[in-house]
Image (tube, rainbow, N blue to C red):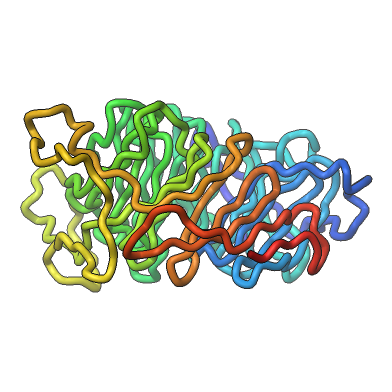
Length: 405
């Protein structure tokens, strides 16, 4: 990576090539001292990365196994961002070790077992996102979009205070969509880079707490800090397509995930339950030329889709339960017309969990207590999910501490 110039008042803009990592076992004084700082899915949920107090570990989800670990000294990493299954990762330290401060992104090449570049900022990094040709750095009030190979700044986005580092990307090869908070409370900012188009719309009255995009970037699911309602939007025009209810009491939503076939939505919260909702929408692309609120550039990108947006109730799946009084929609309060979750799985409330979809109607769940769960749901009847696996991955050696049900 070549040297980078200072792009703004936030960016330090230094690149160092060839800094050796400290691979091996010498970064951990004892297994009992190991702490889990973070867990992150890769882009297709086939793997996850765990940032620990002395380095990071990568795990395969199906079948479950530890792929590799790197122990790089005391301090560890709060952000370990994978790029599918390739050898490039983005690392951000916790700040307890001066080698890995929380305002520096390390680009790590695991094939070479060394840092091939670093990029420093003047404030703490909240998140890093990777695409095949780009990487995105999220700060408290700003998001920077760079090319991955030559670290050229392509775009900057101002946001409302974003301590959670909310930002999500599409990951289809032929689309580049970015979603993040806007400059106002509850507002969403969408960048369709291929279409040279920006869309802003209000998603919630409260601040946004969680968001996720479909792989093609055409659907966005959001939840607010209130944590009772989850909304699904068309990213091209900001249309609200569906609203589902997690519950009545306030909750912190830790993760949202949309299934690859866009039939299901999963949500994990601090209430100790992972909810699965049935989706009634299918996006096949829309003609956005009639939307006067869209900022559009001169060179539209042709999506691989038709000019329609269809409401879809799959014939081979069930639907979300709702109140028996939902027929009085518009007369009674909105609560009585809410769609509730289709399937549920209960977890300990003492830890933070993130959930995603596996294969064949399964949910995979990773917890900050060092646990991995795999469970299945009935796509027709729903209800309580069936646990299939429970693994304590931080303590396991190969083939150990695994429970198959």
